[in-house]
Image 1 (spheres, one colour):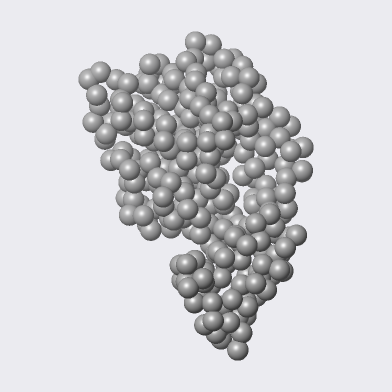
Image 2 (cartoon, rainbow, N blue to C red):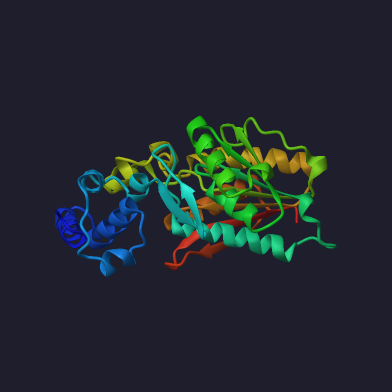
Length: 297
């Protein structure tokens, strides 16, 4: 009977020249199928693997050889220390998006208003929520309420499952809408609004050049942002302007973008909010990644 070590080495060999990290991919997939920590593979190399388990391992390796992302094979992706269910109807959460969560938590903690507001007077609205990772991570670490918006029924289904898994389902309202088009804010209930948006921002030309892991498997609707990548932000900003005009409350908007889009996005914002306060935050790779817009504060 074949052993863990033999299967491990065979998997690495099969993934060679198929992925940029064959050893790590093999390690993750074997540990996942065996339902063991990765250390188990090294501590127990001579333990045999039965036929049923071997078939599962080989199937997962074949899927990875075809460039299917690890997260879709396992159905899991960690984000901000939490484990999220993912499938091909939602974008795989990226580490750089954790910056958005961190900055929202800073805003909530420092509270720009005087006197500070109770958290029930603060609202998070996440536009294009996908797996729900952004609002779930925020709500899990605070007492605020959130609204998660997406135009995909499949994405909202996954987001609801993730909210239930993390015990925050009752603190998040899920709405199907094309951006903020179908959303009506009850201004009287809240005194501070934070809008998060990790919208599709890859220019179409860049999406076409994306690795197969991305282009073949992740939903194009969650990645392709049109000619310059800012199509959806162009639609979202006037919708935010209407909310700002009606509510007359302080609003913070956090937008993720490609580093090359910084100046274009800033100019786009200024056409809608000429007196806006803006700041740019860099991700861990020191790339411009997040724009924070302050309105009415």
